[in-house]
Amino acid sequence: MINRRWDGAVPFGERKAREIARKIEAHAESLYRSHFKQSEEATARSCSRLLAKLTIEGGFKGDETTVKTVCKLSRDWTKPFKIKRKIAERETDAKAHFDTSLPRIARTVEGMNPCEVVYGDVHPIDMLFQLGDGTTIRVRLIAWSDHATRRLMGYPMLFAPKRGVRQKEVVESLIALTQDPLWGLPKTLYLDNGGEYNILGKIEDAMAVSAWPGNAKPIIKAKPYNSPAKVIEGTFAVLERHLSRLPGYIGEDRMNKKTHSVGKPSKPFDGTPAELCERILEGVEIYNATPQTGKGMLKGRSPNEVYN
Image (cartoon, rainbow, N blue to C red; front, top):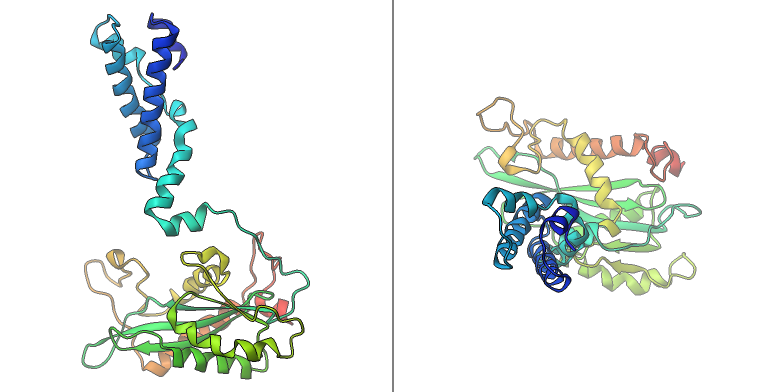
């Protein structure tokens, strides 16, 4: 009914034993449903306490040590109920749910042409950059990533505090993309869900009658919290490893900033805005020229090699 030790030691009838088993199983499910990070250890301890209480109330005669021994449940006993954590995840952390739990379709690169699908997103770069008066400047990268080759094109932007990327700058970066001889007009743009990309809906009709035949879906907007659908999110993670070598890089964890000396504030980037943008674009070029090892779709080649 519960486990061999409890079944062998507690002389209850089948009906009472089943009733107790249902109660502690329901308790385990409720614990996992309450928090998607609920641990097996904590669940086992809580269910063991409830089992001991129900066992004593049911008429089991034994001292405290015997009851604790007989009613101790293991982590393995709780595992069949862990699936309920997915419910808690869905209800409390939509991003984690979309990132890890939803089934999804993977796009292959076989047979695809460059610029057939191009992802667009804005990436915050964790650089500390200050003006002469001490004003901290925000650093953003309007980025485009080609699905077939994994190439990245960047458009760095520096902003005053409380200012973000505007639709005008997204249009400027797209124009730069289309005018670059190694890029051109994408067949399909797969865009972030942010409002700065709304203006691109106005060019959808023009893209539908472009040089790409059968262009049924020129622009696709990603669903909220659906970052795995945008391959560019993985590209950003690789790019950050290259940018982390730059002076002034502090990393995304503001509570654990990268510093030159323990206990001292981070040093900002020592250079002009133009120099910072140039260094960021160098990081983009390093990414494009670096072979991608592992089990990725590029099979050990760099994005530039795949394009060539």
